[in-house]
Each structure stands twice: as C-alpha cells, then as structure tokens.
Length: 244
Image (tube, rainbow, N blue to C red; front, side):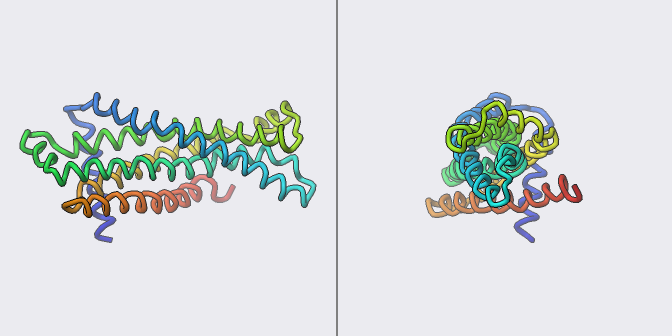
C-alpha cells in the first residue's frame, strides 16, 4: 500500500506540474519519436502474427460447430478490444519502460538529476512529464496501427490458407465491427501508455546507487508495468462491456 501510494503521488505531482509553464516541447517531441515511431516495428510484427494465429485458432474451433464464417468478425473484435491494446502495451512496456528506467536511473546514479535541481530545473517537469504525455499520446496511435495490421494478418491467413473469399472477409469484418470496439481499445491504450511511462520514470527516479540499483529499477519497471496493464485491462473491460 505504501508503494502504491508513493507511485500515485509521484504521478499526480508530475501531471500537475506538466500543465503549468515552462513547457519543454522539444523534449516532448523527442519522446514521442522514441516511444511512438521507434516502437512501430515491434508492435506491427506482434499484431501481424497475433492476427494470423488468431484466425487459425478461431477457424479450428469454429469448424467443430460448423461456424467457420465467424472468423473475420471475431478476429476484428478480438484485436480491437483486447489483443491489440494488451499485447501492444506489453511489448511497449518491455521496450520503453525498461529504457526509461535505465536512462533516468543512470542520471540518478551520476547525479545529473541533482544537477538539474541545482540549475533551478524541476526534474519531474523536465524528465517525467514529457515522457508521461508522450507515452499517453503515442500508445493509441500505435495500437490503432497494430489493430489494422492484426486484422490484415487474419485476412491474409483467411484468404491464402483457409480459403475465404477476400471481399466477403472484408465485408464481414465491417459488418460486425462497431465504433465502440475500436474506441474502447484506444482508451485502454492511453491508460496503458501512462502506466508504462509512470512505472519507468518512478523506478528510475528512485533507483538505488550503482549498476545493481539501475538493473533492479529496470526489472521492477517492466514487471510493474506489465502487471498493472493486465489489472487495469480487466477493470476497463468491466467498465466498457459489463452487462452488454
């Protein structure tokens, strides 16, 4: 409970500081590039193979009940609601949260954070706030691209491997996919992005001294972000889809 409270206070303080000047927009731009653009390959490949494997599994299961035609709709719904945001968030957590924790942890060890304070620069405003905003903004775009790639992965397997007609597959996808399926996944992605950056920044900012402390902070950031993503995914799913 003490740790959860410390993380909550750290995040609240960082967000509160980010809405008052000065604003470090160049740093925000750099973090958007690092967190968003450079994460595209890993998110895209993860979504492609996930959509392809999902199509195969749904076809194999649906064949037992003569329900092979549900493959396009379930692939689309599964990718947009759950697999796209969750797997995208976990992959970005492994890449970004560890990187943030290692970077800020190294700055703590080498006393660069203390130097910022000496120069009258608030470390939370300069280091933490841009990363929180960048991850929160970038993750929905990454997940949206991942959803499209994942659905196309299912399409490629459905047409080339399972014998679906291409036009019929696309039509079934459009007919069953609703706007709420997509928007719920994007809201999840924004929450996951905030969690990823928050855990990386918190663990790095409170890193222990030496290489061992930085390594422990990096591990804790990835594990903490992954667990919080899965826990918050359940709560958000309950919020969006309970009773539907």
